[in-house]
Length: 95
Image 1 (tube, rainbow, N blue to C red):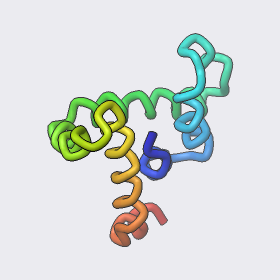
Image 2: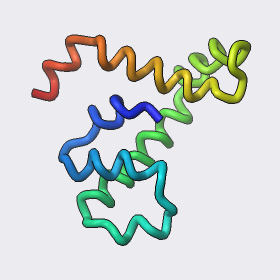
Image 3: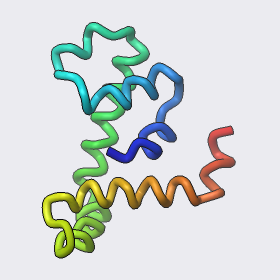
Image 4: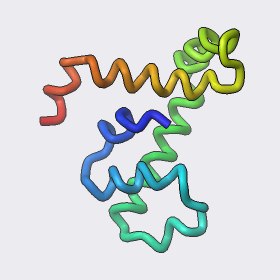
């Protein structure tokens, strides 16, 4: 998971918590959390659905497939976090 990108796309602390939890909880357990955290879980899933279907992500994965095969998606996630961390224009958007 690209933790930094998901955090950047969260609007509240509760949503950040939900974004981090999503990869580690079962679907039925999400309702045991406060609404704000549930919103983060839902947001995480929406982001993943959008990016997983995006043509640019499919192209990016092709770069890594010869090297790491099934882990290409994880390598793309880490790469995206790298770019988010180093793009100074993004830092001025959230402050």
